[in-house]
Image 1 (cartoon, rainbow, N blue to C red):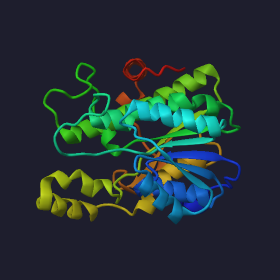
Image 2: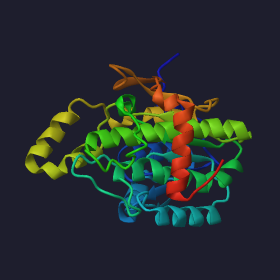
Image 3: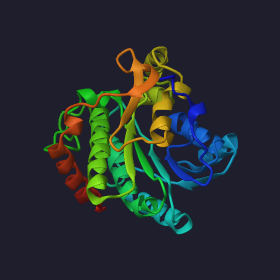
Image 4: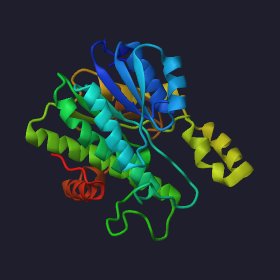
Length: 301
């Protein structure tokens, strides 16, 4: 099979796509390509000023809406406003994320910030939009994982990492939780006969604005580390291809996981990636789902 590129994205005319974190990095490239191929793209962003600038750069049929995934009130307000104007949603790309290597921080709802933003916020958002997605002819949810999920483990006795906090491990846990969510969502959608497909992707090691931000708490030494780290990454346009393929390729099956195929899945052409054993464990999926419902107050499927 030939190398998959953004030029292989089918016509997206008539489709409404929601991309979280669409004002920069992977989200910006994703939104740009979807708009370039004809989709109406909703840029779901925390900073609407940055979102407006991104929309100007993207052109096409775009709109900007405020969404702070670290606040469940914001998630609910976003979903209510969106569905009132867009009762049919074709695509949701759960792209936004934080990676912070400083001290432990919490969300507006008291969740450890990585878990609250990367997984719980998207869990709630997906549930609140699922009815509008089920009304679409070929609806799809794409959840953004990371290769760090492979070395992570979910400790349900300390899910918010209140003890012996390690930021890099907290990020890995949040991405494992995101991956478990995407797979469990697929199980539940299939069991109910829903037309919505849940697929996943990861970008390998990709050059985005998250890398320097992660080290900003270390001052000048942190900035130096960030610059060195960027040398090992691939361009954001390449790193975005797995999620674009998951979002647009015809015939994608629920539970499929795309990522780079070269150098331990850190870079290169898009292939089907490998999931960790814990990510696919139905018992872990069931437990995380019930925990997420309890924490967010959003129940579905």
